[in-house]
Image (cartoon, rainbow, N blue to C red; front, side, top):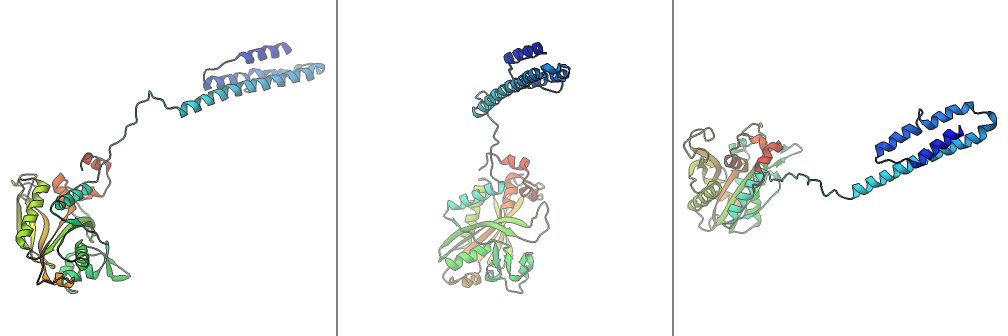
Length: 340
C-alpha cells in the first residue's frame, strides 16, 4: 500500500496540462469516485490494524497534494483567460456596423424646410394639444360651420374645447397673434384626425404649412412661390396646375397639382392616368382671419399653403402604402440609407 501511495505521489508531482480540459481529465483520473486515489481509500479496509494510522496519514497527504496540484493548474489557466480577455485580439476582423439612416419623412421634411429657407422662410412650432379658438374659430370656422365636418377631430372628453390639432394652421394663428408683419414662416408638425387607417390614410400624419403676410402680397406671389418649390422638390421640368377650391380661412382658395414625376405626365396608376398629382392646398388669407389675430386687413394681405409630408414623400420615392411610414420595418427603412 505504501509503495502504491509513493508511486502515485511521484506521478502527481510531475503532471502537466496544456488546457482546462486536460485539468478536468486529471481530476477524473485521480480524484473522482472511480479515480486512483479513491481506489486506494477502498483498499484501506484491508490494511492491518497496526498500520492503519500510518497508512491513513499517507493517504490523506496524497489526496491533499493531488487536490492542491489540480487547483494550481486550474488557477493558472483561469489567469491566462483573464489576461486574454483583457487584451484585445488584434487579428480578429472588425465587427460589422450597420450604417444608420434618417426616416423618409424626416428626410423630406428637412428638404422642404431647406427649400423654403433659401427664400427667407423661417420655422415656427406650436402645441399639438390645442383649443377650439386656435384650431377652428380664429380660422373662420364658426360653431355651426359645415367645414368643421370636413375634419374628424379627436376631442378631449373632459373638455370639448380641447382637442388634438387637425392641422398646423393653428400655429399660423399663434404666430399672427404674437408677431407683427411682415411674416414669412413655415410650420412643420404632426397632426391628428379620426380616420380609418389604410394605404392612403392614417390617424396621424405630418404637414408643412406656410404663411406670408406683408403689404401688397398677391396671388401671383403665391403662384411663383409654389412654382419654385415644385421645381426644387421634384425637378426642373415639373409643371404645376392650380384649381379652384374652398377653405374657410383663405379666399380665393385653390389646390395645386404637379405633373406626375413617375410617368412624366403620360398617365399611370399613381396619378390615376391623369398625368397630375395633387400635393397641397393654398389661397389668399381671408381678411377675417387677419382681423381675428389683430392684423389690419386693410393694410396687409397674405397667402397661406399647406401640404402633407406623407403625400410628398410617397410621390418622391414612389411609395404606395402610407402605413409603411409607421411600422418601423427595418427592411423598408434600410432603403433610405445614404439619403439626407
